[in-house]
Amino acid sequence: MSAVRRPARAASASTRRDGRRGINVEVEALLAGVSAALIAGAFAFIVFGGMSVPIWTDWEWGRWSIGMVSVSAVVVLGTLAAGVGYWRSRRLDGQEWRLELPSWKFLLDAVVVAIVHTALGALATAVLLFVVQLAFRRLTIDPVSASIGCAVVTGLAAYMLYLAVSRLNTVSLSQRMFLFVGVGLLTAMATSTDPVWWRYQISALGAYGNRPSISFNAILVVAGILVTTFALYVDRDIRNLHSARVIRYRRAAPLVSVLFIAMGVALAGIGLVPVNVSVPVHNVFAVGLSAIFGLLMLVSPIALRGMPLPFFLATLGSLILLIGATWLFYGPGILPLTNYELIAFGVLFAWITMFVRFLAAMLAARRAEAVPVENAVPVENAVPVENAAPVNDSVQTPDAVAEAEQTFMPLPNDVPARPPLPNPDDTGLRR
Image (cartoon, rainbow, N blue to C red):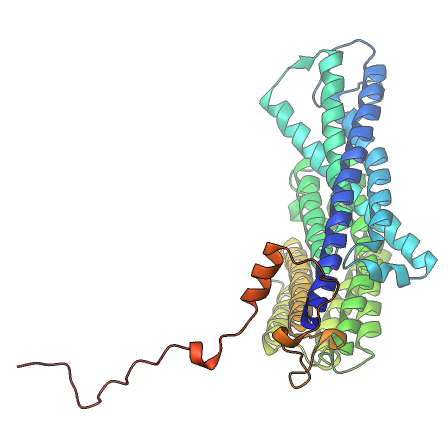
């Protein structure tokens, strides 16, 4: 075996090691799902007490349903599964950067990621079972079948949550954030006790003090926490691009991450202080969110210098749209407040999605262009394959001999003769 094959052997060993880790993640996720299913099934069988129950019903104490038990089990067991999965996956390929975080920052990141993913799983479980109940109206299920249904739903949710947090990156986290906020807001709008809430503003959804309002405010708080921890991933990506000499300024990473943290705090403050508690404080958080986001787009052409021109053009278009909507609302008053808030939310999350996808694409391009220096062999110092000394190849198998023969370059005498060049005066026409 020649010296030029040693890097390939090291790369193949690394690939096999990453493959084994990926298999271990699947096995651990399966064990987490089975464990959650067994616990949820036993809990449901005890709670149902031998009575037939509906698939979904209102949240009232003493009136259990498959949906109520399943959502409760997903909240508890899903959080445990997501937390353990996030902690166990810190040594996977592409996740090692979390080992360099301080203990308190890693713990905060793990808790926030687990809570957000569990909230998304619980919301998806509730929506699924609510739709199933609409399909089977007035249906009640015996306790054994209902317990099995709770076990299946909870086990599947725990399995998917474990896998979701194991391969987490900036793009996937932004997608789940957008999905969580979008589905949460639509659910709050659909379940609001005021059918004409849109006549006022979106913040009115959290001002009634009932369960839909509480869920709406909780969604904003969780989304704000997610944006805050999202700053960790953005900071890492920008630092990597600066190290690769793509982003010019070193202070771009802390500046952008601080602005993301400020936006997360403002978004959480909107949910913590609804309009029925304090209108001035609520407006400070709402206006502050728009102002910080506008500042981020203003400084991005300077702070993020080195990113592609289309990104800055899209940022300029987003800023113009936000300024135009603000003028139409505060100036002539043509734009209703609800429409203005929807436009602002849409521009905010659309720009964040575009921003992180550009970061991911640029990092992928740099990784594809990078050549590991320690494994590179200069051309002038390369050892010919036929002259390379064998390494522990005392016994040559037929497969090894055949593979070695394929590496020989053809000798000059073995190269077939080139065909004659065509005559430029010959048009190919014959009389």
